[in-house]
Image (cartoon, rainbow, N blue to C red; front, top):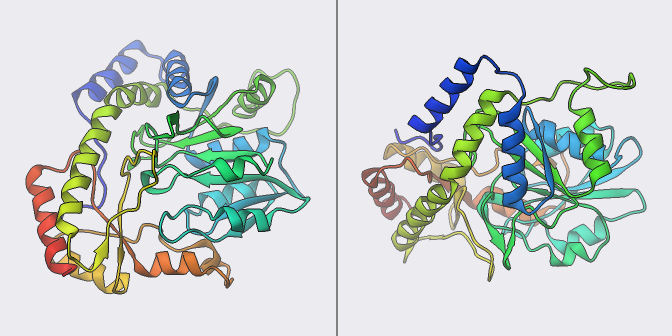
Length: 346
């Protein structure tokens, strides 16, 4: 069975981890600091604060904006539930909005309608590797948290993904574009805000005693992250080449390839096709060919909560399938997947 996702790790990562172990400093240190600087440079932000996970980074970003009880944060329903968890854990209220079922991004019109006097931020994921168009949301005046978990290395109209938001968050989970196993980061420009986030990341050696937690990243993760950043351009090049082969295979079939946005680079974290048939039956047919496909989102948040009124999200969930795409797929794997597509989606 060809798995849906697989990390891309090699000898460079093994050597980097070994060097950290030999040095005897495995807790947060200089490698993490170097990783923070490298990500800030990539995203066009001023500085970064590494964290133990993407969810921790989201929580720290919210607290850095002063968000808490009585506040509202707008999030799309068609997304990993980490966003809902982070907002809820911060004590704020997640306000769900519908998406454009073609791009999978939050609908700017829906976001505008959801804004109230209690709204303190909107979290915008650049879902599946396609950067969202933030031009309309920038006009709202509401602080934007860019979620770059799926789109590191992409650009939008010449601007790096992550450079627009008041804060940017990243995830380095095992299946992300770059990985440190677990891990995340908050990036931003405002020095007082970033100083506050850095203070919230750990509780030791603080000037004052206040509730905090340990969200630190290890040196092993920092070393892995530095290797992965260097490899990211080749990772993206390979993903885009595979996507081009898949697009060729889809011609004339009962499915549409991922959408694009003019002047926005797609880095194809996921290759999500829109179907004419229900997703559930299609997943089973791919499995018969030894190809493990998945729904791109396990379940929309509004369905967990029993809410209605999200037609774009429902359409995306019911008619979308994510096909394996990652740098370590061999040419033979890619051809086998393309063959399965030609049969299953005919």
